[in-house]
Picture (cartoon, rainbow, N blue to C red):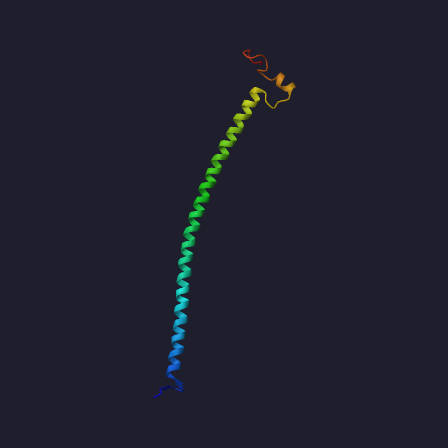
Length: 104
């Protein structure tokens, strides 16, 4: 007993419709999965960006500390005459004997 729908077998029509619905379901599921993964990636990227911002802030603080340390070291070297040519060191204020008053 066969049923014909305008010349098309009902079984073939059912199979075609089933295949089309299956394809639509696969596409829908893939799209949902993709959207979920994108949301997860956005959250991870936001966390990484926040971490990068924190590291940059720390680097800025370290740079300030290094700059202050360099300035302090330069003052100490200048006071002690380290790194200054011998002629300039001899003429520098405080280059006399220990305990003597620096020259003005």
